[in-house]
Length: 267
Image (cartoon, rainbow, N blue to C red; front, top):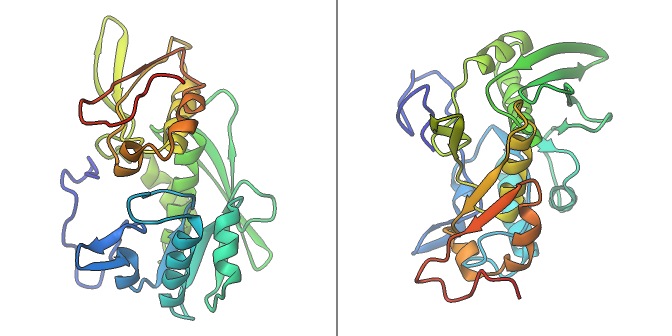
């Protein structure tokens, strides 16, 4: 993704600055089938969610969980794991063995980092952090909507806090955050009709994106135009979940590419 605050997908910072990289369990290269994140050896790792994906690489969810366990074992004991709550697959990963301090984030009352969405305002949420009996609070008011984006923001605040960035300063920075390209990106507006581009490459991502857009103010109709482009989507392994993924839309249009060897038509 290309963060629009920077205009490029990567840039070199100061030599003593933290290095931040996003990665998933996809294989490294055609000659190296290990997940690419096992090469990075992070001091702080955010585990945001885990479900079956990349059907062209992995036979099942258990195979992906093993790769995540390999990642967990690369994080040093003096490092930190920031793990989303409410993710059974991530719980199973940690049960395989973990020697690094773990902090939970999400909406569970037991989590170290918690968010509360403010009703009626899709882009505003409360954050609280408990540490050694002391609780910090802040409010994030930013341009994105949806619970999934708020949880990502919460994880970013937790990671920045581990690097010495205070909660209030981190929350202020999020207010200036511009979405990466193809992440709820407004491409234009004509006659009151807004065209928004989003990468949403998986039924879960499609549902979360549409739910977030539905929560925005305005109450207009929400039309979804979807093209299956990721390898997993093209393989059809998630076909059964596609219909329910657009439940938040008023109307959905499905584009059938010529090279797709299975039909998007309902069975």
